[in-house]
Image 1 (cartoon, rainbow, N blue to C red):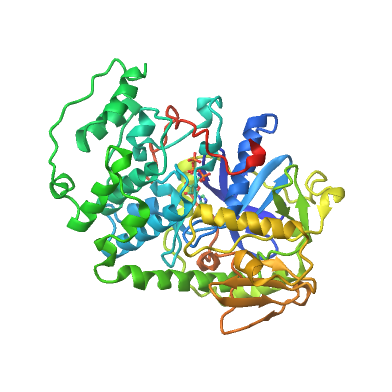
Image 2: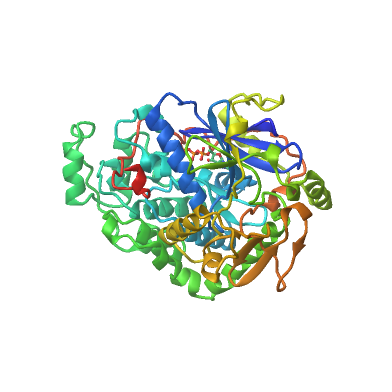
Length: 520
Ligand SMILES: Nc1ncnc2c1ncn2[C@@H]1O[C@H](COP(=O)(O)OP(=O)(O)OP(=O)(O)O)[C@@H](O)[C@H]1O
């Protein structure tokens, strides 16, 4: 942690605090999540470790990129690319809703992210939908921690936004699944289109009532659960007549969008559309937007990746942590390809980019009203880098996926891990390379991205040789942050953020979710 300057708190989650930080040597701006100190709590520790493990496996253009993990003074820290602002910030600037072209781009990218991620409970809400300065949407909370949490973890550990919560979650149906995210997307679409959150319950009971009044009656099964729940049992459910025609029901939205929202906001989860179906809705296909926009996203992501390719590289000295599945790379031991001079040169080249008028991060800071923790600037604490724990392994991440869903990526990553476990001293076979990057015996790193072969020359030579016409190491993606000239986080006024969080509402644990048989 002493390799970073802390610029302020940008967000606070149930499991930790997100800080905007600057790497002292490279000048790179990152978001660092400092997990809450629950060292002594074994179950919490396990949740955090498994969340990190899953985060490493999620690579997609519309998901936030995790860059590295380290331990400092017995706490886990996860470094992410820093993204300029989020949808809530956009809505502060556009209080009556986003302009239609931007709206369509955002919705499309959110659906892509959820479609890829598809576990359940990605925790979709405006704060967690980050937007880079060039308009790339990055979902930043995949909801793993909640999904993995055992049922006996105290309620106070769960701070969640109720307004985007599907009816099956509110009535504590343990069989909830992927459609909960689709519900959240439906709520978010209305909010992005109109500027107003749609279902703003002040308690779980109020939330259920708002759903019944504005969307429709609960299913029989949900009603059973509702009346069995002592929290709700005293309250009758409202009876309301709602228009059957979705255009009347969501009259504030244009027709295609109303249809999409109607497909998302179905009370019965079985009736809700899937993300992949929604991605092929007329709203996106009518003018071939879906075909045009995907290459556009990829080009922008590529542009950023190109800038960052010489920075958070995947080779070098890595510390082991207590969990052998989590590699934490040490900045102090960075290989020469990450030398600060290169980054500084690149950064200076971009310094004439106009700085955004308002620092969006500063609003987060103000909302949190939490003093920034002091970051140690002294030499590394001995417990961070015990020499005996430093081993030479390659820290690689799976490639950013354009098409695979999460389970596909998981499979690929399992395969890639197996390959790495065999200490890759051979030239990777084409199938190895298709799965993930690998290290060759001659010290060269190889990457492949959608047929574009990339060869990164020996780390010690700081040289990248191009094979074909594009070079694209497919891991770190966040050059756009360099467009932020002034990186300090300043307090600013805000209103939307207030009262969006509640601590009396939790999501039932999805016990069957476990991607690692070794953890059962
Ligand atoms: N990489 C990032 N760049 C910029 N801001 C970020 C980044 N990651 C997170 N944030 C901001 O920090 C906030 C807190 O993030 P975090 O994932 O810890 O918690 P949360 O999702 O808001 O809460 P919870 O986990 O309780 O649901 C986010 O809402 C987001 O606005």
